[in-house]
Image 1 (cartoon, rainbow, N blue to C red):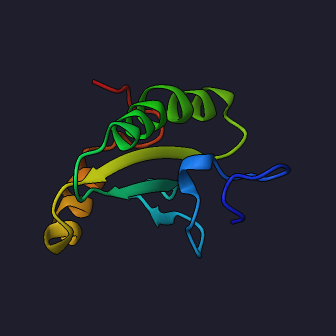
Image 2 (cartoon, helix red, strand yellow):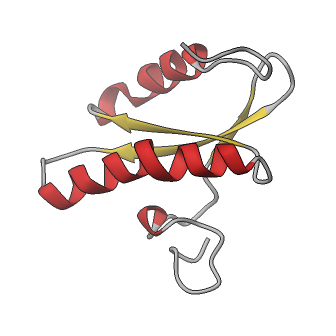
Length: 100
């Protein structure tokens, strides 16, 4: 990932990531690309980034259909990240299921 610069395949909110987003297999064998934002202090710019990722970027890339399945998770407590991630992944609909 090159941080969302020109010619980048990653969104600008993924800047600074040193490896690709987490991709985890789900029961149906499909993979989920999960963008994880670990939140510390609240800043307006960070809130804008989270809303943009959740409501614009992820739905757009999923509607395109050519880049796999994507989801966004904001982790509030870094010490509880594993539990939050596992709980979130368990709620993501499998391929072919409708979303609530």
